[in-house]
Image (cartoon, rainbow, N blue to C red; front, side, top):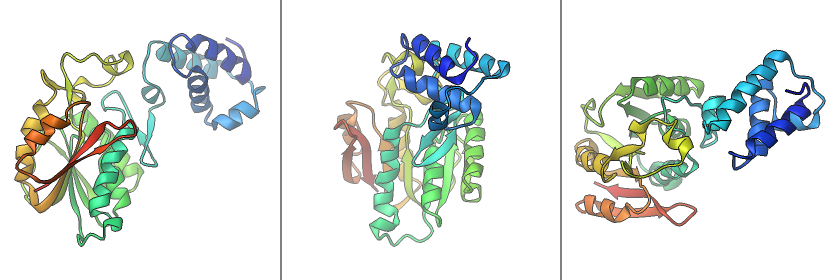
Length: 282
């Protein structure tokens, strides 16, 4: 392994070209993370010498990336809604399309909606890293968020993310199988990015081999969690409260049926024109 940053990057890009869609970016992000600097600083000082421990750590990172491990698990971080979140293999990596779920809720209960809700009570089901719950609490300073997850390890990650962004006093974390731990019926909104992948669906290797299956797969049809969750939500929402769900590809007709006795049902498309968020009102 070469001894300067520039030489190390050159070799890393070449090695990653066979497995990565963006070997240049991956090589730079990994080395910048090790050195604790920005990518610009890395590129403007290619002569920077690398110590033996730095070289060894970079080699370890490259080996993991060559095995298709997600960049986010290697660096331990992912940005979501303008905030940096800790991620571990215990949690699903927050996706940019899930930001649309947050935006859709803010359009209905946020300041821009001229909502009359003062102390907004929000329930996040299947919180994972806490990305949705923390982003909402951070954006709505008068809100109270309850975040549920069946995974105790995921809840620990979520708690750390709430502390990182200064909202831990307004986000309550509960260990729960869907809504079983919720004993109140006064939420203004319920939001969820639940597992919705069918068991037989083949995902790309860096997803199927590394991300938690319990956060991805719902069952034979992919609709099993929706079928359990939607009836439970009716019991905890205030009258005219909102339900927002992330939706998998091709699932909007089924969701429309499951929400047939709700009002104001609509779907919002992602940037590819695919229905991504289901919205309904009690």
